[in-house]
Amino acid sequence: MDEATTILFVTSNQGKITEAKEVLRPYGINVESYVPNPEIDEIQSADLVEVAADKLMKAVSNSTLSSSIFGVMVEDAGFFLDEYEGFPGVYSAYVHKTLGISGVLRSLKGIENRNASFRCVIGIHIEGENFFFEGACKGIVSDKIRGVNGFGYDPLFIPNEGDGRTFAEMKLEEKAIFSHRAKALEAFRSFLDEWKQSPTSNHGNGS
Ligand code: ITT
Image (cartoon, rainbow, N blue to C red; front, side, top):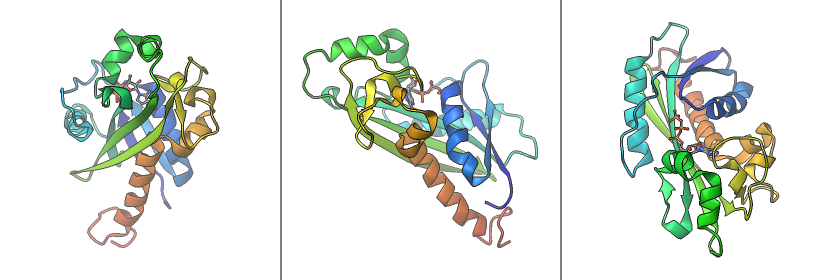
């Protein structure tokens, strides 16, 4: 990226913003946060892409965009437990608010299958078009709450690609190596490299 590109990330979750900044900064992409008030109402759907698409449409129509903003971004994410056929998945925010991570942990007491994954879909609106990028991270649920970093389900989740620590025991830059969010943002970043070269892009080096 040879020029600063500013993306407006519309989310009520500060943790997501911090991580997106961390992943995209090395590529010269600035992430600015926009915390909607009231929060964007999410539709009920079993499909993260559908939820992200609806969020993106609402975010774009709610945001006042200055000319320095290159794109508008939203994200929908979830924590999927294999034992429960993916639940809480798209209901993760609700389960986190009601049961909390200690409730989720209690529900898994004595259960052998502790496989889990995080998944997310990032939706980005650029020059009137919407683009979607997915990321997933597999791991297992810890037998106790561990660590104070990150947010949400991080103190429960031990990624398979890691060294046995939960996400909440890792530094920001460590989680950003292989998290679901980092993977989706990397997919966006490589798309952007190609897109900027494309002759039809107004922002392209090749235009
Ligand atoms: P916005 O919709 O405003 O972006 P949110 O926190 O409601 O913020 P989601 O609906 O996408 O976001 O998140 C679903 C839940 O999954 C929520 O409880 C998050 O805290 C949790 N979650 C998402 N990504 C996570 C991550 O990287 N680590 C831990 N928990 C995460």
